[in-house]
Length: 192
Length: 210
Image (cartoon, rainbow over the protein chains, first blue to last red):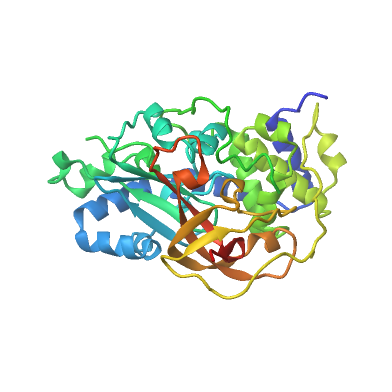
C-alpha cells in the first residue's frame, strides 16, 4: 500500500479545498484553536477542586449538581452539558477513561492529553486498574477500592481528589497550583 | 459495530505514554484538524457528533491504530465531507503526495430501524443486564459489558440515542444510566479483584434481570 501523505499536507489540502469553496471564513480556525488552548483549559478544573476544598457549601453543590456548580465559576459549554464530580474517599478511589474514544468535560478539563486517548490506557484500565495506576505512579493500598468510570454516554466526569492533610489551612490560590490534570482524571493523587 | 475503537479490555497493549507538561496541540495542523471538525459540525452543519464518532470507527483497523488522535479526527472530517458531497476525494488527493486515508463506507443504510425500547423503566438499585445485541452501525455499548449484569447507581438525564443519530434516524431521546459492574462479572482472570467499573448506558442497551 502507498505511504500515507503527511498529516500536515492532508490538513492543508482539506483547509484549502474548503477555503476555495468559501466555506471557511478567514480567522475561524484560529479563533477556535485559541478557545481550546486558552479558555477551555484543565486549570479551570483545578479552580473547581480548590473551591470545593475551601468552601463546604460549594462542595455540596458540586456533588449534588456538578454542571450547575461549574457554571457558577463560569465553566460551561460544549461537552459540559452534564458534569458529574466523583468524590474520592479514603477507601474509594475514582479513575476516568473513555474506552471508545476520548470524551472529557471540555469546559473544566480542556481537550484530553495523549495518554488518555492512547490505545494502551483505553484497553487496559477497565481490566487491570490497580496495575495501570501503579505503573503511572499511583500505588494505592490494597484495601482502597478502585472504581473506573467509562465515559460511554453523555455524562462527563471530573474527579474530586482527596485533599492532602498538610494543605488543610492553605488558601484557594495556593491550592489551585497543586491540583494536576492527572489527579482530576484519577491517575494521580495531589501532592503538596 | 465491534470495531477496533472498542478497546476496553483488549490485551497485548503495553506501557501508557505520559508526557509531562503536554501542550494542547503539538503542532499547527493538529489544532486546525480539531477546529475543522467543529466548523463542519457547528457552522456548516454537515453532520452531527455521532456521525463523526462513527466515521472514526469506520477507519480501516490498521489505519486506526497507526494514526495519531488528530489524524483520526482529520480522516473523519474529510470522509464525511466527501460522503455529504461538500468536496470530492480528488480535490484532496490531488493536493498531496501519498495516500489520503479515508473511512470505509457505512455498513448500514440510513433510516434502517434500530432496536429500541420505551420509557424510563429502571430505577436506582435495580439489577440489569446489558442486552446481547450486535449493532452493525454505531453504538456506544462497549462490547466488554455485553450480556453482563450490573446495578443502576444513577439515573442521568435523557440524551439523544446515538445508534439512531449516527445514521440519520429520527431524533430520539432516552434516559442514560450509570451501571456498576463487579470485576468478576466482567473478567474471570482475577477472581480476587474487588474493584469495579461504572459504564454509562442508554436504556435501549439494557434489560431487566428476571
